[in-house]
Length: 110
Image (cartoon, rainbow, N blue to C red):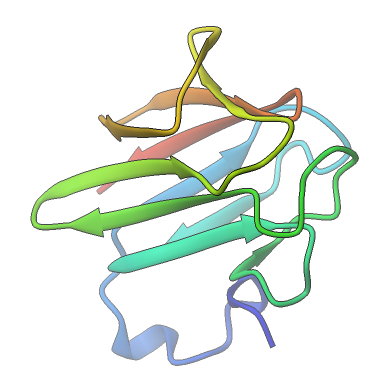
């Protein structure tokens, strides 16, 4: 079972924000984000399963850590981009827009 099923211990975790898919086949879907690290990918073993063309099995992670939020590329071939700049690991702010494999995302914090 993966986190995007949104059924595993939801009531026991502190909601930190949402990840919204802004383009591609899964446009309009949003996923809840909780403390710690969340991995998005096309693998059923990723916390957020997104079988979008070009998204790799474990493409990127979002980590809530000590009042900071980090976006990290997990060594994907397609890369991870903020403002057309390829990143490996970047501290992000509320309402950051980014792309992975041509799919645009928005992250919203509480």
